[in-house]
Length: 185
Length: 388
Image (cartoon, rainbow over the protein chains, first blue to last red):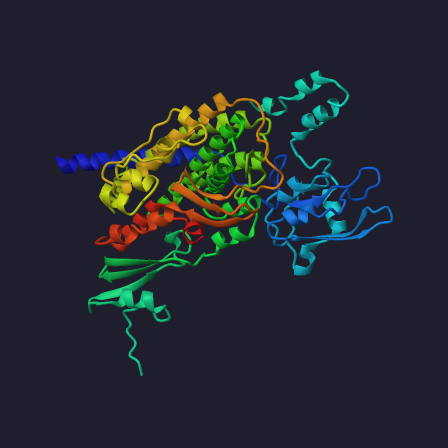
């Protein structure tokens, strides 16, 4: 009797399992045929840090202050600059050792001049290790499609509020306060 | 010329290990290396098994193959710089590590996070728990030879990774938590997508249940295998589902609530016998509970800021603290000693799987090699965290 019950229980459990397998057999495959098909990257995807440039002049916005270089945990950013005639630093070269970059976003967050951005590019491998030192021109090129370092523009209402305050308008600041976070809720 | 003993595998080993494993080796016994490159040890764990036939007489775990000196690195880096490094400890549950670390630093500084940030943190940590348990379930099935469930689990985990990618911009090493809050607010559409995911996940969990729970082969492979008594689990400071599977209802979320866990309604599933089957049941139930918590967080998500007012340079006052959270693998803790500068003076990481790993010799003794694979799998060891 016990054996019979056991056989019955086993067969039911196997049938149940096979039922699940069959159900999944009929489902569409989820595999993305990668080199032929590309994933749709979400806004704010972190690929590689890149330099933002001025839309009018096309030059990098970077002021060579060096805060990003100090923030980088691995010290991968090297900034080469000279002191200009008006005591402003002129950026000669901006080197990022992309091969070691762990894309932690700390440099982008630290930048007080909004001149760094996380670019979406991800196929950056190279046969020559020297080419993994990204210099200014390449970083500017990578950052060309972006306008703002914050992908969600979270800072914008805050900035608008800060600008509105000196003009003595308290109300717009109050309206702007909830921010885009409210949309998500 | 020295005589070579073919029953041993420890030729170039350091004397501490070699002498221990070869001590009183009976002539019927042989030593076999399991790992460090063994598919069922889930990483670079090496276990030297002392076998009599196919039965395990004793086991000696050998760790350190993934040692990177993370605790020492922390001393040379500033507090915010260490956040991305915590991702690399338990890389299957990166958010939980970040959370532990930032909670520690916040405790040291006396910072209060805004309510929205607290809810987002809990939401992310629970999503991570589901993702981590899915990896475990898939790998556990794989250990047993049931590769089907591996594919299903990773398919669902992909959905969670998509959610993470949307909110944090990365898929594995998120770097999302910040001292004083979270890096950015949830993107538009995240809440709806998460709700859809919860609905889907509840259905899929039923499917996993049909595949495993009640399956005759699964029960034969797991029930009564690797029993762990509650006393022994407590004595060796086991954590997480390994501890709860033995019937000890200890969960840091309940015992010492952090963030908003005291406002949330969830249960702490416990097992009875402490065998591999109970640990499996605990994890499956935990996934259900996590989905419940995520739903509550989405409902209660308040508006407002996601970052507290934090000074530009983070210099916690002198002192030392210990902060603990319930990561998917158990109670993860961080001990930070500050001397008032921008770098931690000393940082210690309490890894739950390091404690769970000690249980291997006692639980596998007397079982067959194939069972040892299941038992080790049921502890859910992640070597990135063990070796640090």
